[in-house]
Image (cartoon, rainbow, N blue to C red; front, side, top):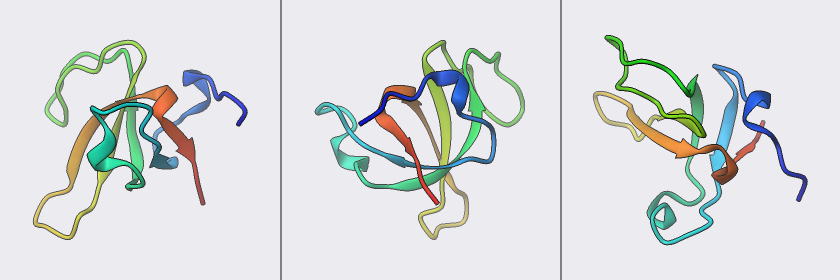
Length: 79
């Protein structure tokens, strides 16, 4: 698989989480949209996003979507 650099992700991109370790194993295969690419300071919409992480919003059918900071190397662009 070709490595995609962090700068290739843009807000609105549809991505799938591909866990590369135990920590993100629960969300492996979940599909969401990129909200913001770190580093970003906190604001009214999200908390701080560190360098190397991308904030992904996942709609799981509840009242509010789930937002997860995910390392960019655990994400793959999808259609």
